[in-house]
Structures are given as C-alpha cells and as structure tokens.
Image (tube, rainbow, N blue to C red; front, top):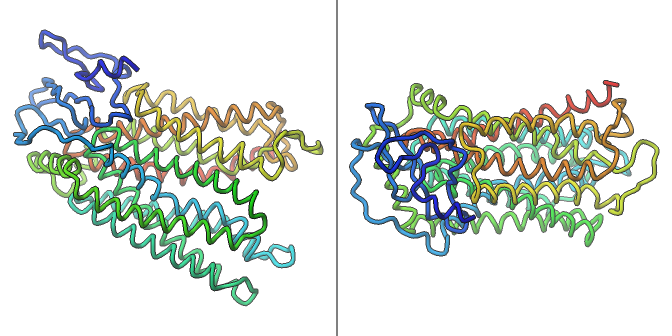
Amino acid sequence: MKEVWNSGSMSSLDKKDRNGTTSTQEEDRAPIDRVNNPDSMNGVLKKESNGSLSSKSTTGSLAEKEESGKVSTQEGPEPVDPFHLAYSIILLNGIGVLLPWNMFITIAPNYYVEYWFTVDGNKTSYAKSFMSALGISAQIPNAVVALVNVMQIIGGLLMVRIAGSLIINCLNVVAILALVIFQNPSEEAMNWFYIASLVIVMVMNASNGLYQNSVFGLAADFPAAYSNAVVVGTNVCGTFISVLALVTTAALPSKYKTVAIIYFSISLGVLLLCGVSLIILNRMEFYRYYLEKGNRARASQKSGRPTLRGFWETFKGCWMQLLSIVLVFFVTLSVFPTVLAGTTPNGKGQPWNSAVSKELYPGLTTFLAFNLMAAIGSTTASFIQFPGPRTLIYPVLARLLFIPYFMLCNYNVDDRVMPVIFKNEWWFIIGNIIMAFTSGYFSSLGMMYAPRVVESKLSKTAGMAAGLCLVIGLMIGVAFTPAITAMVNNIS
C-alpha cells in the first residue's frame, strides 16, 4: 500500500502538474483514504466559475474543498480523530441501522412461520403469506421515508433525525420483546398477532429509512472513509447475525422463543449503545469541525433547503454513481438470499453430497460466506479505490452476469426445468464469494464517490440520495427474484 501514502496531494479526479498547469489523469489511480488512517484525506479539484481548476492539498473530505476564491475559510488546523473514535461511532451506527430488521428477518422463518403460524405441522394461511407480506411491509415504508428525507433535507437537523429514529427503533424492539415474552401462540391470537407484527415491521423500516439515510447525509461532511464506515457497518452486522444464527441453530435447536429473546435483546442493547455513541460524537471536536466546515461551505454558496434545480444539479453531478449503487444492490438482492439459499450441492433425486450437513449448509455457504466477503469487500474500498468515479459503472454492469450464472447452478432442483450447467457445489461457493466481495466493494465505492463528485453545497443531498438509491436497489432486486424463479421453472 506504499502508493497510498505517497498520494497525499492527489485528487480523486484530476492532478496538477508542478508548473501549475492542469493535466487530466485517469481518476482510477487516485486512492481516497486508508481505513486505518481515515484522517489523512486527499483534496478534490473544484471548478471555479471561470472554468479553471484549483486544488487544495490540505487534508479533508473531498466534498468539503471549497471553490477557490469563493469561500473564505477561517478555520484552524484540522483536528485528529482520537483513536478513530468518530469512525468507530459511525461504523457502529451502520450496524445499528440494519440490526433490528436483520434480526427480525433471520428469526422470522422459525419463530413466526413455524412456531406461531404452523399448527400440528400444517401451515396456516398466515404461515404461507407471512414472508411475502413481510417484504412488502418492509421495503415500501423504507423507500418512502428515505425519499421524503432527501426532499426535506436540512443539514442542521440530521442528528435530531438520527436520534428520533433510534428512539422509535428502541420502542419497536421493546414491543417485539414484550410480545415474545408474554404472548404464546394460539389460534385465537393468530390474526391480531399477524397484523401487529406487520405494523411493527412497517414502523421499524420507516424509522430505518430515516436512520440510514440521515447517517449517510451526516457522513457526507466527513472524509470519504466515514461514508464507507456506514457500509462496512451494515456488512459487519450481516456477518455477526450469520455467526449468531449458526451458533443458536447448533446450540438451541427448536428453542424458537429463547432464540427470539436472545436476538432482540442484543438488538436493543446495540441500539442503546448507538444512542450513547451519538452523544459522544456530538461532543467531539472532530465532529464539530467537519459539521461547521460543511455548514460554512453551504452558507457561503447560499445553499439552504434544496430546490428542484438543486436536486437536478445533484443528479447531473453524480448520476453514474447513483446508478451504480442501484445496480449493485439490484443484482445482489435478486439472488441473495432466496436463490442462493435455495441452491443445493445435489441434483434432483440425488443424495446429499456435501461435507457440510443439510441443516448448516445454507448458513455457512450462503449467509456467512456472503456477509463475511461483503464486509471484506467494503473494508477493502477504504484502502483501494479502483475503478474511479467515471468508470465504476462498467464493472457494475458486468455484475449483471451473476443473475444467469446462479440460475444455471443447482437452484430449486425439485421444480426447475432449465438445465443445470454448474453442477459442482464449488462453482456455487466461488461464485457467491466473488459476488459478495464485489457487492461490498463496488457499493462502498459508489457511496464514497457520490457526495464527493458534486459541489460541496450539494454533498449532503448527494449522500442522502445515495442512501435512497441503496433502498431502491434493494426493492427492485427483491421484486425481481420471483421472475428468476419463474424463468428457472419454465425455460428449458
């Protein structure tokens, strides 16, 4: 990583020659940051109104480099993030963004479908419809709230929005825990329990949409590694839950109520820790420095509540990065988890032929492998940024090939008519590893680039738009999964 340390005066888009003239270079070569030193950030060249380029070699967020001659900076030396505490706090909130929902969706097949809505081995109508209803109840409120949050962005209120969504999430988890502890399954209670669970999911994902979107907006004022910390946190969250699921499956088989209490107690504890961490962050000189710096840049450029023209300018500036984010999550959620979890090492009518037991196979080869490699991929993006903002779209488009690839593995072997090309389980495992790594890596690059290829006054809007595009990618990916199943079952 020697090249990273020697590039402190390079921007992510352009470089200046020593004689003062400007030479355009391939932006793919310029690293943005190191995760183990997130304080040392490169500058970004901003176009002045006369069309010339100016560069600041001082460290700081790419989005925060003011236009030369337009912004008067009256700031002291940049403070250090002590022990990378601010980075760790943002990463922790990246975990907190998805933890309650991921816990819920992980426990749902066993606790809700099997334990609550299945009677004497017979699945009721509630059991048959719960998982699909869960997806609809989750994604729509998440997307709507994220969109509203982008349209109503006011930078100074982001911390209040984050705190408010945290409180709502804590109350949601408390309500779930109360139902788990005090209400036992019964046919009389199924109807109201079904409705209550879906209402809780809707409120949870609405607050999650606000929480996640606001955290991305908040991180947009910081160096690029801090935006990536949110993505790293979400992937660490997935890895943790995958390990927890394997442990509870092995140690507490069929103890669905006990496992649910463990899951949601951990969720509540982490959310409370996130709340405490935000109080600490709000008092840090490092946080106040970058917040005030971003506010000064927006104030000097007369940037208040964004207008339609402002949204259009933001979109024009970072549409390729936003499209990349949508496509990354579209491909990922098209196949994960349904297609991957439905893939087996054996063909139709063949005996189980994997060294991993049937009970642990999805947990190891699908969930743990995916979440671990996605976390590694997103962490790698803090060290290496290739390709750059202008060319990120090309490998992202190439990832579309993962959809037909997994369709040609042993997915849905009992009902499929499409021929299987990749029969060996290692084709599936290696494909999952590559797909997961690129999902974490390219999504992180998109999140890091989007707020930093636009003018500083638009950085928060771009950061929150990136969060919205993440949700859009999730939605269309989940919606496309049934089409994959239909093609596998009907195209020979």
